[in-house]
Length: 157
View 1 (cartoon, rainbow, N blue to C red):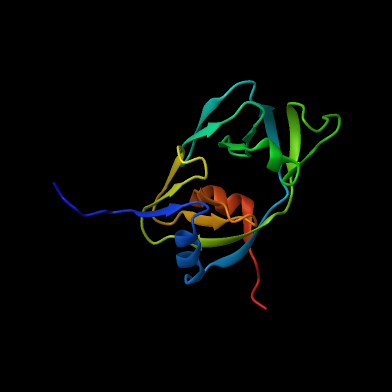
View 2 (view 1 turned 180 degrees about the vertical axis):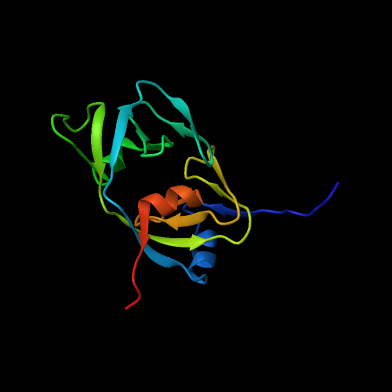
């Protein structure tokens, strides 16, 4: 048995992870405004994302991106990140537009893991994937090809 741990592990929302991240060269990035398809979970579910299985609660939005990738968004956070495309109405399944949210992003040089706020969901990133920190301090992983297609790194001032 080996004590070698090949992965960096971050706990979303933990003070220890937040403190360590502040010492790293993160870059401001902005999510592009893109069309997505949304369905709202009618019961608790487990969503298979590119980075791992994530738990969703009844009422959460299950978002499908431009490349077919899926991820859940908590109902309480959804309206701050997406707007409906007519004739869809907020809270209905259908077509939405992502809002240009700002994140701090770090391209990772090795494999890593993020344990989400729910304590049950775990995302796994590969070398070159992006560790992102949202405005609310939550952490996530975005696979490199998805990040390249959906985010812009902010220009240096």
